[in-house]
Length: 219
View (cartoon, helix red, strand yellow):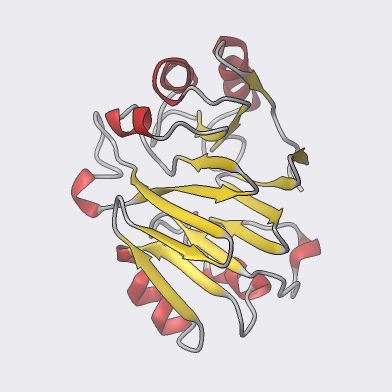
């Protein structure tokens, strides 16, 4: 767990996070949640970057959603989410959209592959920038190094490091050092689950030199 300026960040594994800020519980891409989340039903907001099974997991959403939960997602997720959660408010964002929910502003940004075909640019898959408690938290989504990263100016960055479907650890460090440039901290993700290893996260942390880094424990 990491706490920065009143915002708590927990890594749920893979690309998944649980944030507690401004009296809101926010999940991003919940997948393979630990058993302690069974029937937890505590989500105020659920953010889904794209429609792959390890990001849009209805099994995991079922455990955290309640009648008042709002879901914010990329457009390609809408059909599945409406089918399963038609009683909830579901808001789709295209790249470069934004929405404000109470005191939390959520921006979307492109996430795509440049040298592989798993996340095509034309799919409009996204990452999220959360503006909470005077912090900008950037969850890149599943992506390679892309120019859009240079526009974010975040305090905290959550960056995939596994290679195969996303950036390698070395590419992720390069993106962090040269484009993302977080003011406070960079946190590796997308490892030690489907693909990627702890070593990838360690390599990323060693190579990032523009800010602090931290590997979080799954919780």
